[in-house]
Length: 347
Image (cartoon, rainbow, N blue to C red; front, side, top):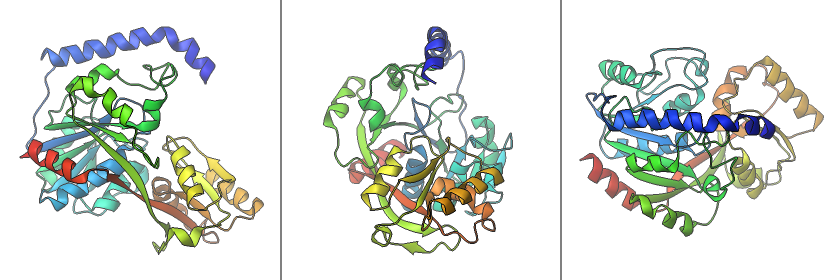
């Protein structure tokens, strides 16, 4: 992969030029953003995956519900088998299966119980969603680069680990690095959130590095809540899994944090299978998991909630194996300040 990136390095200036031209056309109103009949809050990033958008979308959507709004969520539906507009939820329960809408929006609906839809064209998706459900604010999942739809608030997330690694293979534009846009694009953001995930300390130097953009910077982290039985939905405390020799399954962008927190709560990660992000599980992967489970004499299978929503379709194939997912929640270090900021921007 590293060798391939080096070979593709000459295309970085070409990609940078295309991104700059596109943004300039929007800035000069050659391309125009369309307003829809609801407030729009975009949650996005500058990188390809791994910043924690889905946990933050869940946190933000629930926060908006508690604040008296009627939120809905609109996503592209990355990894789904379908195309075009699809209503995922009208009154808080999924209307279709995870394969036809994508794991992220499916998980969001399960956690937030709100209307939701997927559509590659965010303007079309927003208009159709608002015609079918009662909502006065749309949370746009992964919307920073989708400038065709006008928004009231643009929030950009960063993984703290990404910010600490300034190597060319990380903090460079595609295809050399993992950045969709350069840091200069933060000029159009309203707020920045540094997600330290399971890292215990806030890196204040990173916060000060963003001072040049004159944007409010908030910090967030992940909190492990419990382990949940995938099929029965029974919750178990973290302490009950201390010493578990489990088979760990992961199909997320950056599994390091997930593996680290499992180790912290006493679950061995010696036996693990790491799939690519947004893995669409088939019987082939199910058989691989089963083989590895029995060959390693594991007590159980432990996975992420994002993977669990896709593995659930194979409940019959796993009827002799206990599968649990780690339930996590995104928390803000200074939630009151963030609530005040949100209220100020949306009212």
